[in-house]
Amino acid sequence: MFLQLERLTKSYSQRTVVDEVTLDIGAGEFVCLLGPSGCGKTTTLRMIGGFVTPDSGRVLIEGADMSRTPANVRPTSTVFQSYALFPHMNAIRNVAYGLRTQRVPRAQAEERAREMLAMVGLDARAGARVETLSGGEQQRLALARSLVVNPKVLLLDEPLSNLDAKLRERMRREIRIIQSRLGITTVHVTHDQEEALGIADRVVVMNEGRIEQVGTPREVYEQPATRFVASFIGRGSFIIDHDGAESFVRPEHVTLGRAGGGIAGTVSHVQFSGPVVTYFVDTAAGTLQCDVPLELDAAHEPGDPVVCQLRSRARLAS
Ligand SMILES: Nc1ncnc2c1ncn2[C@@H]1O[C@H](COP(=O)(O)OP(=O)(O)O)[C@@H](O)[C@H]1O
Ligand SMILES: [Mg+2]
Image (cartoon, rainbow, N blue to C red):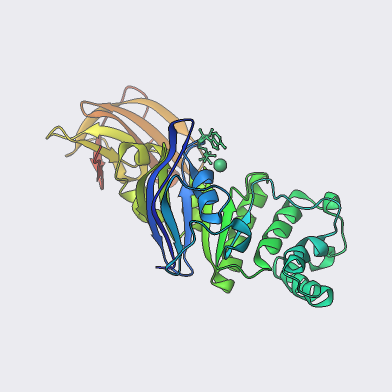
């Protein structure tokens, strides 16, 4: 394994905010730490980068124990949520800075910096001062500055949270393209489940300092292991099976009919959202949400008796 977290633990004033986090990440893999605000994502990332010292546990990169290695000599590079750019320097100086601290001669450092600016699509802005750059440009600049030192591991802390929704989606694609081209092992922190599912090879769902589930975006979406994962990612309904166990059903996995086999219920609410119509159906097993594609909609109304067929469900561990 390229990057290994072994039982990483951190407490602040006797409150454990990261609790025995263990994770193996392969070379070139793009992993997202996903979870609500305060669940310990940033603290975990900072322990990987060397900005926070774990109380116990280890960080290994290519098998070498980095736990006591200072941040500035770890083969990791972090894009902070705030970007932490140097406002008084122009774009190219910001990117070249990391190389200059490694005593790379100025001309050579600026040439490498120029290549990195080209990679993130900022070559035309090389001479621009940071404060004249847009939010999206600053984000690209922060990425270029992190990549120029040729790190083995790229750490991204909510890098898209300051951008508007459209730009966020575009940058999500661009980050993934650049990451794939460089083949750099990446740990990306976000509280945005859509972002995590859309960008990651694997998603690590965290809650209260602990890992709830690790899986591909499809796995955590289709087979959530716990009640927390099911409710944190996407939409759906919790129902009680005939044997008393709790199941979770995605709205797109329910088919609505007027009669036939399935779970009988009554439409309690209808919600139109463009491509789908969402029905809320009260049944003996619980209320089921059901998404019907607009072109298949039979226009049921509140009070109508319907039958729900479940095409798939997830059994929850807890
Ligand atoms: N330096 C610190 N001192 C005290 N508490 C901290 C410190 N850093 C983080 N915390 C607390 O640890 C918890 C986890 O924080 P953090 O890792 O930043 O969460 P996330 O990035 O998932 O939002 C939060 O409750 C936060 O307030
Ligand atoms: Mg954070």
